[in-house]
View 1 (cartoon, rainbow, N blue to C red):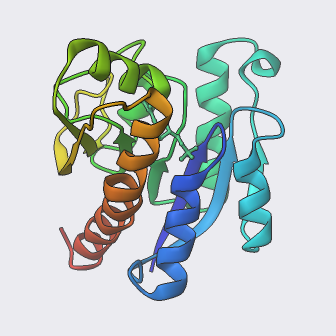
View 2 (spheres, helix red, strand yellow):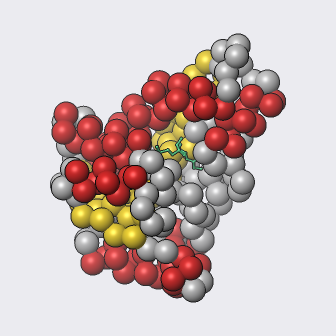
Amino acid sequence: MINIAVLVSGGGTNLQALIDAQASGILHSGKISLVVSNTAGAYALERARKAGIATETILKKECGSQAAFEEKLAQVLDSHGIQVIVLAGFMTILTENFTARYPRRILNIHPSLIPSFCGEGFYGLRVHQAALDYGVKVTGATVHFVNEIPDGGEIIAQKAVEILPGDTPEILQRRVMEQAEWILLPQAAETVCASMLGGE
Ligand code: GAR
């Protein structure tokens, strides 16, 4: 099985979807063996502990610089033998120094249909606010490989979600999670791990 690390910053509902997918067998070609948070006390860490998964917290301000943060992150991942990295609500941009070490081995979930409402500054509720401000009638989620361009790596999977009258960013976020993110991310993680086991 492929050794997976999930990187988180907050509530961790996408991490939970991955944990549940592992329990139900949807995710069976990889095993979540580490959860890394870049914020102290993220609820996602609690979810990991409840599932018996090892956790690490790495704070950028304690590392002193982006380069030192990424170096420490790579060290921790190496020490756990991590082969695939899943960014699940990980709210910091990784530079080429880091992403180049793991070509087609880092996945990210983004809560819009890329190339809409993505790139630097588009994260969390801001993405849904932007979609509502623009007035689009359909949004969704995208899983993509991570490279040096924020939200610019190759797309693995996308799913559309309707925007309804009266939607707030919070209501829309929840619908996109339920109808797209929590389904798409575990499926994409399985696809990537399975193809690695198949020698691709
Ligand atoms: C999710 O909606 C995820 O797609 C988004 O943040 C939320 C995290 O929720 N990620 C981004 O905006 C990345 N640019 P979670 O912690 O409950 O999984």
